[in-house]
Amino acid sequence: MNLYIETENNQIKNHPAFEENLIQAFGKVPSNWVPFIRVEIPIIDIYEVYEGVTYELVNGVYTDVHHVRPMTEEEKATTGNLL
Image (spheres, rainbow, N blue to C red):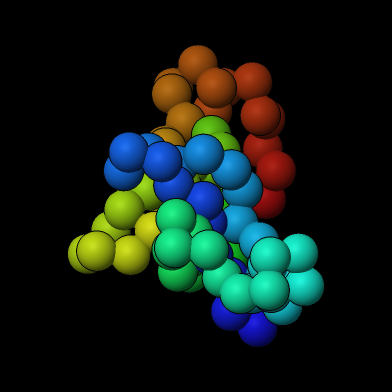
């Protein structure tokens, strides 16, 4: 299933939509909707924090960019020994 994302003035305007839904709604994929590639959420290690996802232009294609960071020493201390 192909995904597209709406843009306006080179800025993302909406969330991704399936090509079939756009065709059903508009009769075709409107020119301001561009291809989008979905990227799965990465597996987070024990001492990492998932901070969310943004939609970004990467190598000429809009895609999910997942933001993960290492835990601070304080965060690690509060997790206890989980292993």
